[in-house]
Image (cartoon, rainbow, N blue to C red):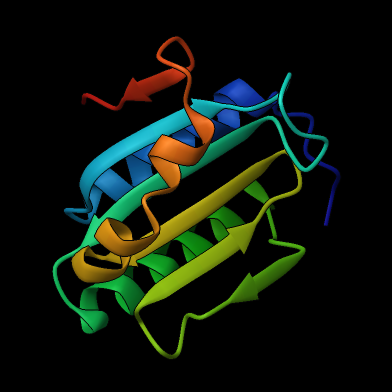
Length: 121
């Protein structure tokens, strides 16, 4: 596959669009570039069931591979459907079921009031 030269901000918005098109809930993205060497952005969203969490992760993976030649370097938790993580190097995607999202509350750990953005279509 050809190397993709998409910026992390453009990739983040694309990921949000794909998740939104499949009815992900409460999509937010957090700019963590100045807080972490892991990545530039976290994208966080919810599915209403374990089935939807799996479906969101699988659809995102498939669509980004097929249409943009973007392949995650790592994917975890997709089969369980409670908390799926897809690592696209500069953007890490967290797809939670609602109970797990409430429990781990990643938004509160990483946002400082200025770097959290709620995705709106």
